[in-house]
Length: 169
Image (cartoon, rainbow, N blue to C red; front, top):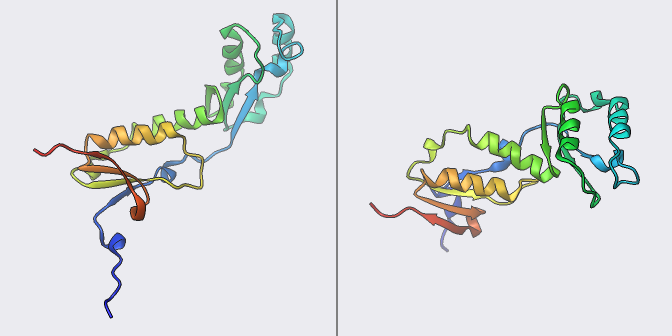
């Protein structure tokens, strides 16, 4: 009987797991329409008064996404004003959803990594994760790795999808 060999464990694949870089911290969304009349109409005086009364300290050291859940049309300064109120408390503020927030966090993190450790290596960007890694983060990781890696795959070592192979020199 032939011995079973684990080829995956013996391979020279380098695994790039975005989950390893997932920033710890609480993420919240603030729906700006809560301060609009019936969720649609921004009355500046009332809007400013409600922002003054809001307890912004509840967002201390949190990652915050500001969005609007209605089809309200409102001026850009309204979102900016909410961000100004949040600034003394929040770790990071973005306009958009939690996914936009996670993507922005990954953009910052991925730009600080030294990718030279992946030079001329076969790299697999791990696909399955327990944390919400946005597609934009995978795209950015592939972009950064492409300048270094010999090849890039996506998924798991046992069922990887080829994405990139460096031209032969």
